[in-house]
Structure formats: C-alpha cells, structure tokens
Length: 281
Image 1 (tube, rainbow, N blue to C red):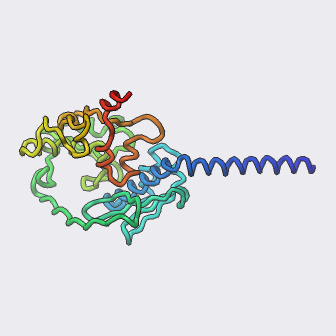
Image 2 (cartoon, rainbow, N blue to C red):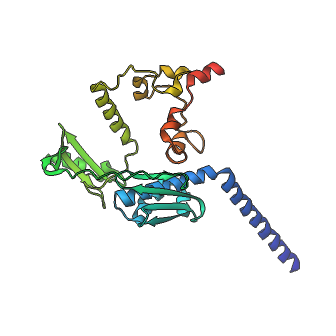
Image 3 (cartoon, one colour):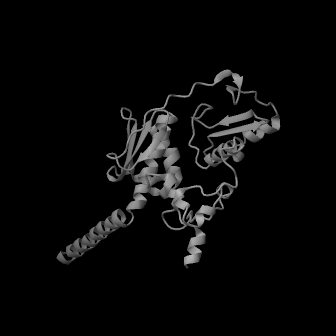
C-alpha cells in the first residue's frame, strides 16, 4: 500500500514538474508567439466593438475561434467602454496586450502605454447623401437579373461565414447580400483588400504627377545600398527584392509587422534586399 502511494506521488510529482517546465518554456521561449496572439485578439475585438459596433461574444466565436488556433480558447478579453480600449491575455494575465480606439482613427495596438502618445480624434466624415447613387451617395439600383441573384444567394458560392458580397458593374452597385449581423453600413476589417485601395491611391498620385512608376531613391535609409534602385513599379508589383518571410517558422514577417512592432511602415522599409544577401554569401 505504501509502495503504491509512493508511486502515485512520484508520478504526480513528475507530471507537475513537466507541466511547470512546459509552462516555463512556453512563457519564455515562445513569448513572442503568445504576444502575437494576444495583440491580434485585442486589435480584432477593438475594431469590431468600437468601429463595427458588434458584440464581444459574437466576435470571439466568429472572428477569433475561426482562426483555428486553440490558444484563442485560453484568451480572456476585457473591453472598457469608458476608455474605448481592449485588453487581451492568456488566462487574462499571460502575455497581456492592449488595443486603443481613437475617434475617427480606429483601433491600434499599443506596445507601451507609458510611451504611447494618444493622437487627437479626427472629425467624423459627413454622411453620404441618401438620395445620390453610390459611390457619391447611398442609393443603389439593384439588378433583377435572375441568374445574378441566384449566384449571389447561393450558399455554396458564398462560402462559410459570408459577411458581405457586393457586385459593382459600370461604376454602380447592382447586387448585394449580407450575412447575419452585417449590413451595408457595417465597417469590415480590410485585410488584404487594402492592397487594392493602396493601388488605387498610388494610381491617383501618379495621375496627379505626385509619383511616377520609374521613380527611385525612395527613402534615405536606402541611399547607400542596392535598395536605392527599387522603383515605385517594383513595389507595386511586389518585386522589389526585399527580404520577406511569409510562411516559414512560427513567426512570419506579416505577423511581426502587424502586431509586434511600434512602426509597421519602418519594419517593412528596413527589410534587407536579396541582392545584398547574394553578394555577401
């Protein structure tokens, strides 16, 4: 009997040590991964609560858990309606991160509350004229084409978790469909759709003579190396040769840029150039 109790105590002790060791390794060796998860949760919840006006439980269920990583099931999220802020952390205190909403500017991750300078609020954009056709106003003239409507409302074509589908033809909205809890007035996180917006803005700047496709020597930080030869056209075609890790390892450059650095633009700008790497190797 005593031998059995000793064996049980020994096994429990080994398991406790293993759990403590694993926890310590996770908290130290993988601190950046935990920080990324907490920062992503804080930012996603902040934008959806204070910009899109959605409720936290729905956001947790349909935005965080659908990312597929079990770590989000361990995430505790606190939303302050008074401070317009969100705190997220593993169990509420491991790798805690903070996101802050500012009127007219949206939400941002805050790396250090002590050094962060809160920007001034921006005035809200005036409401679009309800009687003018989109994009000048909110009015739409929807098509009654049965094939278009059938395709638009086909659950298989919409895919799981559909939030909004808008069809534009000849500069006008001709069809639209929205998922449960979403409407034409619901702001959505842009993610990679922002690339199209950026391309349009650059095109407008080129048209106005403020930029040119062959323009080089874009940043002072690139003046002394091969990056000085990178042109606007190279950047727009994503062929500038900057070192960029999108799919190798547990932490990719997009994750670092979006959630773990204080200056995302500087992080992307300061990537090394593959030409220089080849010359040194």
